[in-house]
Length: 357
Picture 1 (tube, rainbow, N blue to C red):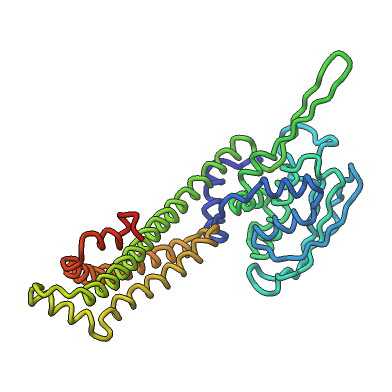
Picture 2 (picture 1 turned 90 degrees about the horizontal axis):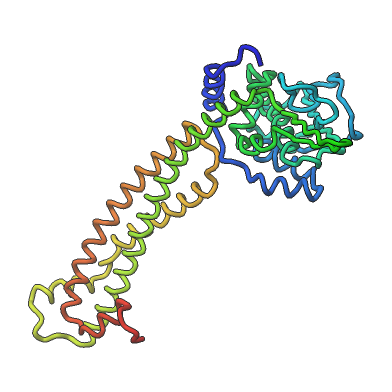
């Protein structure tokens, strides 16, 4: 499109990141499988769901070759081409009608809200292209439900679909190559869908990937810290298991030559509530790990608020780990005392370094 340069695209992506955030790539293979198996309605619902639209899709079909007249609310005949030749008969028709009273994004009013979608019977001819078309069309719903000032801007709509997880499938589906056999020759034509030129699309794609890599690094760092905390919990439980078994052993086979200071610590180990502080720190760490796993499991949508949440999780991990390490070190010291009065063979058995059971 005229007047669209890299700076315009960069500014648009920055604005959309603040408003919408950015999402991981959708599973294109899963969506394509739905189209190929003619579960088109389910495919559209999954696209809407990934865009954060819990709407009800009222689906209808139009005959092959149908062209829309743009008279019933928002509609388009495809992701309109810019300057890459005639559409001919290769366009995939998709229309989404957007009511003026559309509820706000993220509000309960959008749940099961009916949105009319009309598609052509030939929509399954090129599944990736159809998915790209529907992602674009439903991104209009996203922008309208935000009352976004650029809600009718087709470049912003393309970028919205890309930022909300569809950049890879749009990259694959934005060009359709059609080969026609004619007497004595073969003709090949390429139809390009979208409002961005090849260069503009490549720039937008690379910019969005760079943003995703920034968030992926934060998620990867959080995963690593979570794994370290999990390892500390596992080590602590293992130490507690050794402690309990060694204490039973020492009670059964009391060492009469035991130094007085060791005997004193072993008496302390028998006191009620001896391990309460350690067990509390383990429970706190396990509760934190449970919250972390739930957060990370559903982490596919990123923005500044998510980054803030990740940093808070990291601070909490550090505090929990520090407390767990402190109580664990105290327990380890007493395990070391007990081990001095346990036979080597039994120690090897407890620590799993022998085949004995």
